[in-house]
Length: 194
Ligand code: HEM
Image 1 (spheres, rainbow, N blue to C red):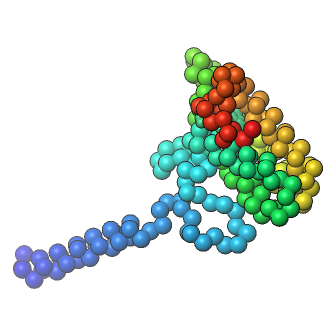
Image 2: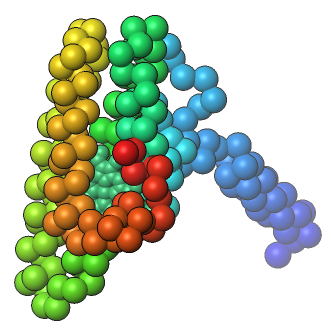
Image 3: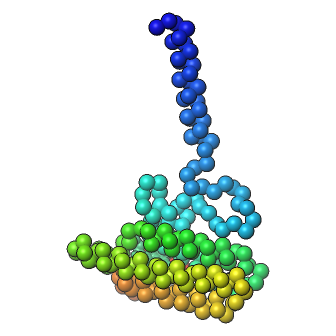
């Protein structure tokens, strides 16, 4: 091959390399929101924040649960504060996203570990999802109530959400750990939101 042709091939390959590397360096990391969100937009990422899980893995139930616990705790302290309406709507939206992510993940916990056969595991996973669907409905109700300023109804919804949480945790064998003082499973006393 002529020397000129070799050089131009080398240059072309280098340019391609720079484009690829440059593209990776400047691209928005997958799933990350730009730093400025449009006003009124619902909260987004980083990925792990709502238990979305790492790239290539399924959603993290544990991460989603922790996220719900944090938001619930914050919500409980300020649900009646009309000045915090937008913040409360963001907190509810964060819980909705985490709830959907949890529903799509593989649950852990004592009851799952105790399930021996695949059929038992599948049955428990289906019940786990049903509880999270129930939770999702309650969260959407809460969102409407916050939006419409219906504080008393919103407070009642929060109580309902806590009941759904406790029933779900009972199903998954997590209340046994609660009795030992490890709310939510792994010493997340406060993040459980109660
Ligand atoms: C707002 C409602 C809820 C809150 C705030 C909440 C909070 C939590 C927290 C803080 C943990 C401990 C996470 C860790 O550190 O490991 C946890 C674990 C767990 N929760 Fe919930 N939870 C809620 C609803 C539910 C529901 C409805 C279910 C459905 C059955 C459920 C199933 C589980 C399971 C399976 C785990 C163990 C996670 C794992 O290791 O895979 N939770 N939850």
